[in-house]
Amino acid sequence: MKSKKALLLRYSLQFISLVSFVVFLANLSYPPGLENLLLQWFSRLDPWLLLSQLRWQQEIPLWAWLPLLTLASTLLWGRIFCGWLCPFGAFLALTDKMGRAVFKKLSLTRTKVLHAVQPMRGYWLLFLVLIFVLGSNWVLFLTPFALFSHEIVRVLTGHIPWMLIGIMAGTLFFSRLWCSVLCPTGVLLSLAARLWLFRYGLAGNCVHCEKCTRTCSVGTAPSNTGVVKEGCLACGDCQRVCPARAIAWQRSSWRGENSQLVPVDDIAATKRQESRRKFFKAAFAVAMAAALWKKTVWAAEKALRPPGALPELEFTAVCNRCGRCVQVCPSNALCPMPITDGLANFETPHIVPRRNRCDLCLACQKVCPTGAIAEVPLEKIRMGKAVIDKPRCIAWNEGKMCYICGEQCPVLAINADEYHRPIILPDKCVGCGSCENACPIDGEAAIRVFPN
Image 1 (cartoon, rainbow, N blue to C red):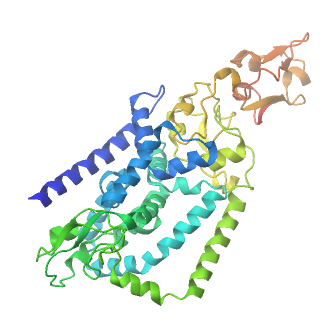
Image 2 (image 1 turned 90 degrees about the vertical axis):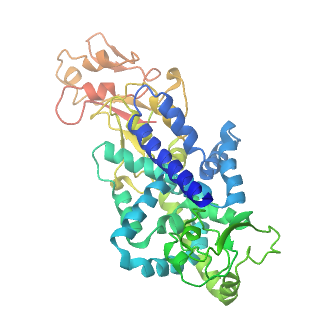
Image 3 (image 1 turned 45 degrees about the vertical axis):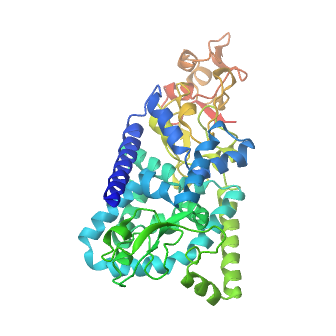
């Protein structure tokens, strides 16, 4: 009976988490309201967001208790956040159920794949930590709230969610491979879960039917170890399918006195690993991290960023590419940068004034979860500066009466000289792109906004 109640509670929480996240994000619009506040606080449950804040702001935010609460719950009950509360995890759990129903014959293959790749989880975490410390914020992009948000925004804006499709395909055939090995939040919480206090373990006579092994979506069943491994999602599926009722929720010892805390096969596997192999794998992770850091940090080029954006190098290192600023922008001025602009800039928001101008509503500042777009008052906004290309300007080159750029400037940063030709007042220009957007000539505008 307790198992059924726990199952109902978990399904209810997963349903609420998934539906509310999608609905809030779909309804995120100008001006941002309660849905933005709920999204912000929900996203801050991820410990990586706190690490990013500490790295760049060097201060503890007021919401630090949220990710600390996630870590505390992990120390008590394991990856309960991943298995019960994560909206992306709920979506992949549903995808996994579909895959198991359609591809029933792949049960053994799923288990073998999960067991084969799990030893690489530690090296993957090392790689993620290294590129994070070196300045790349691609780690945050791969976290569940940012990645799921990014892909939903792509759907809402009429683009194909390639990453979501790829992860779904991997989940259909290889179960929760993403949650088990690749998700930065998942592997970080798996590390914390090595010390968890309560976990599922064998508490009776196991008949070795392997049902728990085939059922476990992350390959952590207790059939061979006597206790679930640290990657367990605390879903309880192993307990529910056990015909002998040999699996129960039990307490472990943090001091290692309980043999269940350190599974026997894990100890044997660790002893079999050679130190030389470990060294080369770690060295490879360091080399890859250094190479990616060079491409993602120092390769960044300036772009016209949202109002209040941090300086370019900091912006590309803090932005998690969640797409919420793109979703909330009322003028559709913000759009993600293509891969042709470099890996550092890929999918980060920028403004193309010739396409759409920034209305200076500052809604993007309100919805940014990482602080990449700081809350800066309008009088201090300096995205870029407008420059007149006089040979292309019909007022300067042809002597025609044209002052459209000045008429469209919302901050009165363009004046007319004695011949009614536009001139820029650099101290007033905020770089919103209204002038470039309104320029009537064909092709490239005669007045262009360049980022600061």
